[in-house]
Image 1 (spheres, helix red, strand yellow):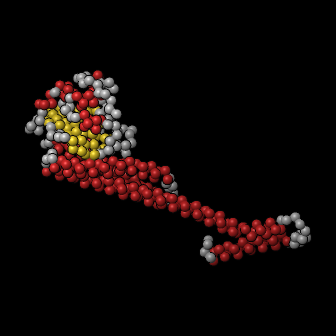
Image 2 (tube, helix red, strand yellow):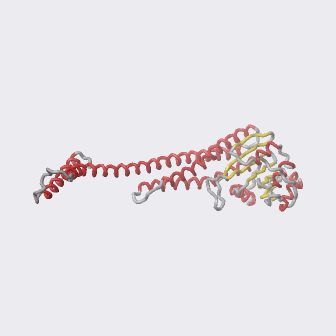
Image 3 (cartoon, one colour):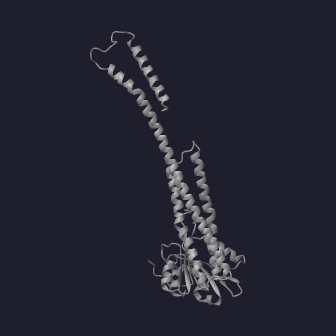
Length: 342
């Protein structure tokens, strides 16, 4: 449910939640020159001076929500989609623009990597609005490129740059998961290391959490390429870069599938090793029980308190009994060895 937005003002401190609405933004002239923007430029209506703009806003800010509802020119349905709490990667054409939700790995300090962060976007011919609730490093990467003079030639090019930046941030992290899986395989082969089931279960949970968003992100990017190309929103170069992003995300999804399968095999191997160890211990106990069964029978028989027990009056009876039991034990062990049970 969307909170009723606050009135739009030019003071960040007027935000009800105390959150800065504006993170950064650029206005692009017809010749491609990029000019950094301020929140005052956004709410004053000065954006019309630029051929296209990119605004990166804080989704949690009431000021940003108010501007989106009242002054952005985006219809209410699209704004609600941009501000909803839970999202999955998707790309949908809406009127003269596109609603796009993508995810990036969480590289913020103290955060779980697999807790992927949503980057919501509204893209039209002359405007790109991106929203996030937590810092998305990929957006800062593209900001750095623009400040370095590498300005995307169109909104489509800017979208392609963001998609590539998100993928660039994912690749080394998923490669780390692959390395962890290799390490677990080495641990299983090392007899001195005991790998706990909880370790592999937690590892699989992280892999599945990443896969949950990366697989639909592949479909979202593929749909964006199809619909954007059909609408003439992307140039041939943009399509080439976006298809490269689709291919890379597809490969990442396949890598996660392979890592998940390997973790399942590793967990099954750990279970098998524990089962084998338990069976070996039970086998030893069974052998001991079989060896001592006749001894227990004889000692129990000679321990009854009734008359007629042989050897009661013989001083050699105990030695003969012990020797007989030792001989019986040796014969049983020989039989077990001959049958290859031990």
